[in-house]
Length: 217
Image 1 (tube, rainbow, N blue to C red):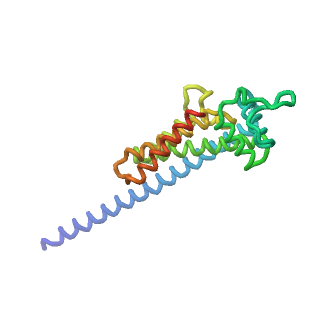
Image 2 (cartoon, rainbow, N blue to C red):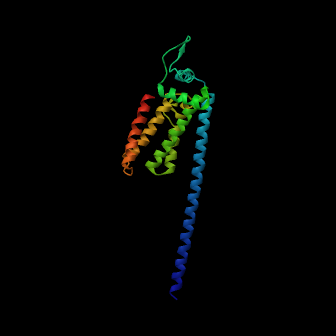
Image 3 (cartoon, rainbow, N blue to C red):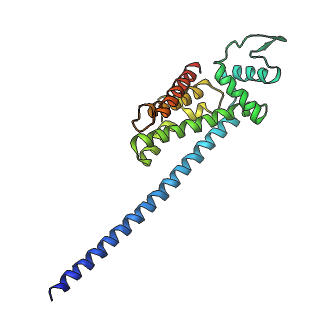
């Protein structure tokens, strides 16, 4: 007689726990679907902005020098400009790194100003991916990492420093931002306790290399 209420209580508790676990599972599925939708939308928006900038923004300021030097480097293997039929120095270029990246674009995608800009768009995507991964490793929350990536992509103190607007052109700032992000990510693995000695040694070298690239850019 006394076992029936206990059995009913156990059955009711099992049902309530099952309902709660079912609701938690459903919420996790919805959260993952929402995260996938928002992250996919972010990637599409970023890619569209980069492609629009590469194809529609006219060449201006320092980019013209970088494109000119990269073209001469590509066509006649001369790192410099051509003035009145004679080859000159690099003059007002922004450094060897953006010029070399533009040259890579010429070799991979053909000789045009759009081809020279595509590499910088790829670098911008890698920069944002490193921001997301770094935030995910530090905060261990994908929503926080996504929010940090949105801030890095769209919220800048000056539109002239916005990575999406700069990455549509062959500017040195894009290479510098990407190198700084890669260097910070490598430095994180250096100071992380879980990393092995071999990984730390490799990351020390990568950190110095990326920070040097950032300075050169």
